[in-house]
Length: 224
Image (cartoon, helix red, strand yellow):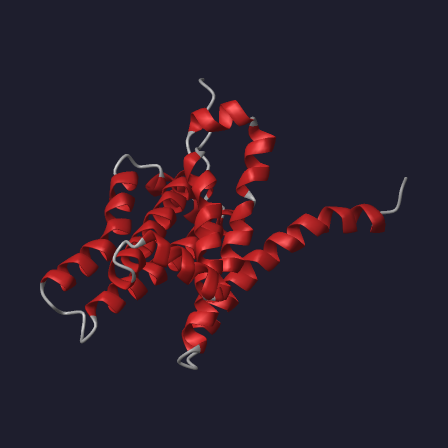
């Protein structure tokens, strides 16, 4: 008599989630999702639905979406480890590129609506106002990250150097948070900033804990 075939392992929630995330439609749907905020802002601008100051609404909206996508980018690794949804790694690059794209739109709105593309005036404004200086510094740090967000760059740099370069995203997060804080300080409105600060604080704090945990375990584990 033939031996019974082994039963396949049961598919848990993590396996089902990973199967959905690796589906061929997942990436196109993700690209569509990250374009929706831009589409909404564009349609609202065309339909004159951005309030009394549409230029400010566009500038503020693109900046806030850049910060939101930055939070999502940094959340990928913790979510992978907490949930077992390892296929989330497929979307980290997409989210990083999206963050840079919205940051570019934010800078474009500032240069166009606030300064009329006057480069000399933009340079003076950056030097004069600290909150614009730190925002611009965050954008400059993002440029090499976006420029190396493809497989050929990883091969040329080597995995270790590529990872070291992309740790600059932590500085980007802190500078972006400071930029948003100073911008809201003028209106004495910190409610939304507090939410972003809590999210980024938790994400960066988790990374710091993970970095220090191996050293702590090495010191406390008895040698046999």
